[in-house]
Length: 140
Image (tube, rainbow, N blue to C red; front, top):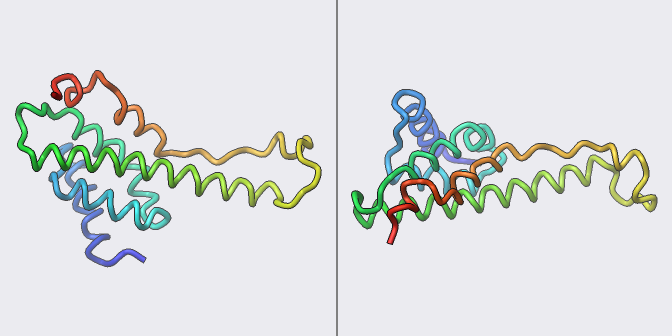
């Protein structure tokens, strides 16, 4: 269960993005670290704000930011990938449970029509791996 401080951090990050499309460097990393540790509780936060956090960070030009800021960007990108991977695993487990585990009739029409849950944070990978973003264009 996330602490009240973590919930406050998620709220601060969300407010910054909602009001001015900004995020404090350290808060970006800390909010994603906490989300990675408490994915189920952070699902609403990650689905709504993770792509935006990463989008803001990859628009920064490395030549115009310091080493601390670069570390924040890189840590956040790594956390974004970790969160997507973790979410995919959770959704796969849920879909296996929903399709009736232990069935010896694999490939039946009921399993073929089982809808897989949507990974709503998957879209963040587009920003993480988009080499056209400012952070990658000028990185050395």
